[in-house]
Length: 161
Image (cartoon, rainbow, N blue to C red; front, side):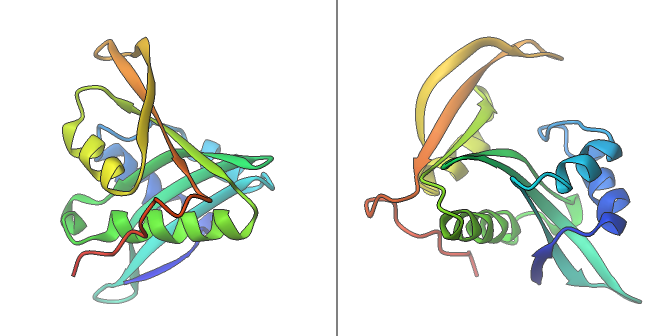
């Protein structure tokens, strides 16, 4: 598995993964292309060797403003889940954001999404507050979480074997 920067010809593959991932933010293909052109964006893809050519297995999207950033979207294709790809994508993104001077990373997650909450807590995120009725289909609260990027109390994420 390799992690690399998003290229515009990845858009169909990451959109297909997103469509198979109901917990991921549901964007149009054009949204990824437009965001990739923003100087504050970081979009990374996890790539695995396929039968004929490399295959996109997952992706992560961050957006930075000043010294803060937001994890905007993350998804792993169903065939590649539970292999540590999300951890590796998150860690690679965090390292890039730290190098660019980011001090704090935020995200929003459905209050009922216990696997995601456990994943983010393990990665050093803490719940700050909730946003009532933030999500639709179904209506649900969002939990806003943050990770202090400069704090030594946040252990590094160690990819699962």
